[in-house]
Image (tube, rainbow, N blue to C red; front, side, top):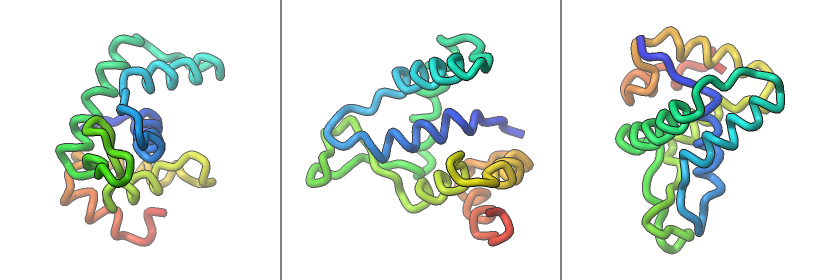
Length: 130
């Protein structure tokens, strides 16, 4: 089973939504995420590892079709992204501002690789996940 840091992925997907006109910076977002966790009293672990993980997640989300290059007419600069329909669906499942977001994360965690496109499509299409 592949384990994912869903909080970090959620943070990255939210940043994708807000990065029009500026370059996407996963390592900086990981640092901000770590600072927020630290302020809450949560353990962040190794910051350098978290930054590297964020960069790896950027590549994975792009490769697997959850994000794509932002078109120039939408503020794209070649270094920023937009959510694809799958990415928007993933963000909706992970969104911590929605009460009860733990269940979708648990269902995703039960998959061999929840971010495999075919696996994700199957899981996300099930009404009971949300």
